[in-house]
Length: 168
Image (cartoon, rainbow, N blue to C red; front, side):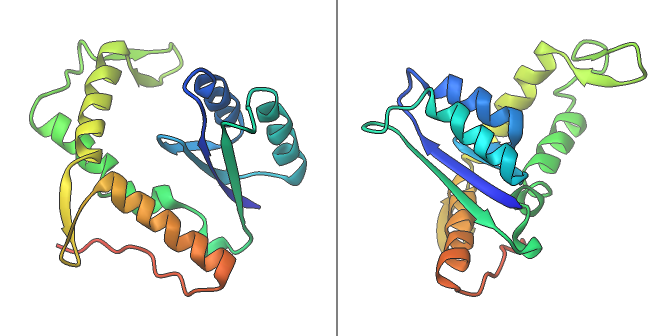
């Protein structure tokens, strides 16, 4: 099944919950994770999270989505956020192939710590850039949250889900 997990955790415990979620799901942004997961792994994830949360202060919500048509918020926003950040870094010479990358000896190339800092800085900048959508000023972060709310309404209330479509 496909799930979207969102949480609001006290900052003292948030890193522990983040690490548990990362073992099972894909981190989308801030406190949002998504991914395909089996029922048994979802139960294991819930048990592991329960160790760290305080029910009086913290909140964890898991939304199950049984229809494949809802399956990837990341795919909606990757071309307009991640791809653009990558092209900007390359085209403006903000990232250097000699100093910002490393290899693992198996023909794989990764960003090193310097490259990761550059990428994440630009990603954060892009995430909070304001854009106009249907006459309303939003950040990309706000747009992602809006998309999650639309999916939630589709799953829980049967509303028709119309994914965000970027147009120039």
